[in-house]
Amino acid sequence: MCSSDLAAELAAARGASPESLEKLLELTRVTCTPDDRKSCVAFIEADTGFHTTIARMARNQMLLQAVSEARSQMERIMFAAIDIHYYGELPNREHLEIVEAIQNRDPQKARDRMHAHIVKSKDKVLGLTNSFPRHS
Image 1 (tube, rainbow, N blue to C red):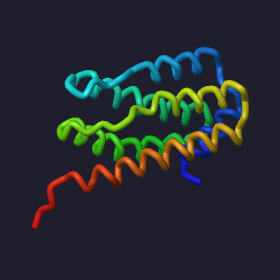
Image 2 (tube, one colour):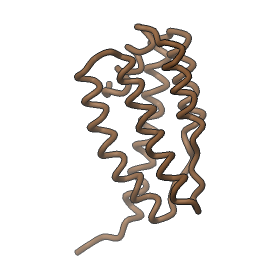
Image 3 (cartoon, rainbow, N blue to C red):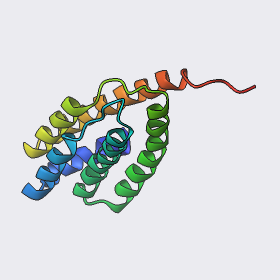
């Protein structure tokens, strides 16, 4: 289990305020248009906001720190992806499923949906790293 999985599980178990849930939904609406760098930057910021908001909802400082550190690494890769015009499918549907599980206070489903989302993102990143030029 990764820190994001646990954060989603705890957020669902502990419950979320209507304001926090609305913030998550707002963040899922931000999209990236590959030809518009500004929109992609806004998407990356919203994606990080989505994950760190869930970590805050878990009410666990160590989890928040772990998620924030992981997102810092992920952001670097995502910014590089803009420059090579690779973006793949945006995770809006996945994010909405996670929000729904948190809203329904279903810890198992929240953890499972977050886990699937993280695995899918990891697979995209691993595919992306093959696109970068190799240095000798």
